[in-house]
Length: 469
Image (cartoon, rainbow, N blue to C red; front, side):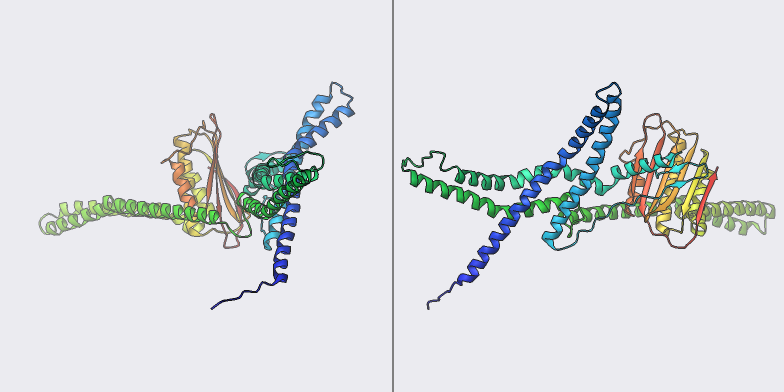
């Protein structure tokens, strides 16, 4: 049985028209993208050059011109670089938003408000400064350098030109080359396949040029879409998470879960060992002593009284060991009074004189408090044992939904994040809560260790104070 298929000419023309419009639109986007990619790296150099020329012109090339031009060139170049980094990434996001029809939510880390301590210094989150303007500038530079989203935008400034060349280069060359090939057909004596007939060669030139233009135009939408996907991968936080981002997050969660399970198993083994070697052994000894006392009560009461005194002393030691074991699992002061007082207790019992500054408007969750407490305890022990410090400063504050703990000592420095070391253990402990640890320890000191964890506070209680030990 024969089947007859009818082709609707209007539908075919509609499909062809849509593809043609998409190709023309993509070609226009490609031109804009090419111009933006070329202007991005060039703009900071142009701004710096223009500033230098203006300064030399104002000072008429005098002896002071170089001394004024150098800072002006640096400021102009840095300002233009920051502007083009932020706006270049913004233009790329807008293009992806128009293509996907979905908003692209961008999250920058919050810059904390400057705080002035009791000594009159302004705290930037990392360092203290006497003048507020200097502290604000230092804080802005630190934020721009450390913010993950700004880092991605700076990387995009370098990747964008390479992506344009690799993805849009071939379609652009085909389109422009085909157009030039067509437009120069009358001024260039071309011969194809040994044919010396000029009209025939003109038709062949028009055909080859038209094919090149058509292929370039048809490939342009694919190139633009691929470039948009590249922007999503580099800038991050795209309208929809990419498979690579989801895979990375799953791998991170798997690793932190494995670390948490290993840490829990190690803690259980430690508790079992301490109970077996300590309180359990003493309780068994007390039981044997009480049995001996029972036999001596009728025959030798003096020896029985001596054994009772020994049993009483052993029971007191067993109780103290149980208390120490409980303190090692979850300190009572941490459970009863929270992280601020628990850290102050660590400072009071530390070998090295320690100054504690706490600024919390509530209490973190109990498990996070425990992780931070034992991390600070280990860092204070390291400052006394390895750094040989004379003074330690502990700053605990909560800003923008993150708990930040900064431990600084004036020791000899040179600390490293070594595999199997204590700092790696702290990193794994904080990783369970999506926390991070950063180390700044030049040789000669000082050593600054910063721990940051996403944290939501509970009770509305203000605790801001200075404590020295």
